[in-house]
Image 1 (cartoon, helix red, strand yellow):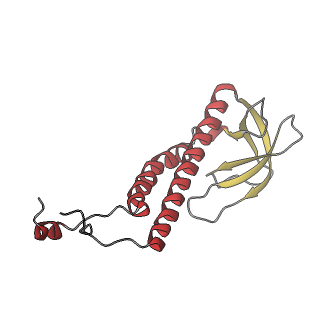
Image 2 (image 1 turned 30 degrees about the vertical axis):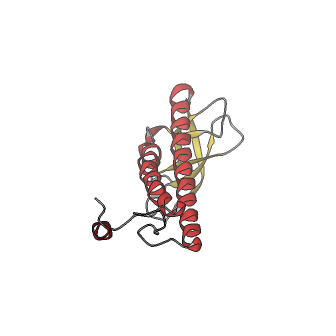
Image 3 (image 1 turned 90 degrees about the vertical axis):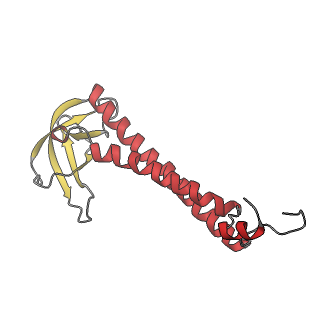
Length: 162
């Protein structure tokens, strides 16, 4: 190909490049959000496992979430505490006034979980599983955002290129 010939493939317009750049930035932001969510859930679970204390608590309020896959929220009042604590759980059999065992962090009383729930596998692994796929999607959209042109193999053959 001579220096004065235009490169093969369609030239991306500025509007298309800006659109791809917005998509790429959105996917990068989503990747960071997923990593933050997974890391935060792992940190909370690890702290509760390391220094949490199991206490009895009375359920003050129940907020049943009707969205598919979303955990329900319980507001409990741990024994000896004056401030209620919000807990996310997948159990739907707990009503207002029930007494449940809760693992509470003594250094941060607002960090708590039901003792019977165990390790929050879905909250910790799902964001960390999705983040690489979203990051890969961001890498795929980076090419069009930067205006990288790909040529069609049939055009290369017609021009005599290998």
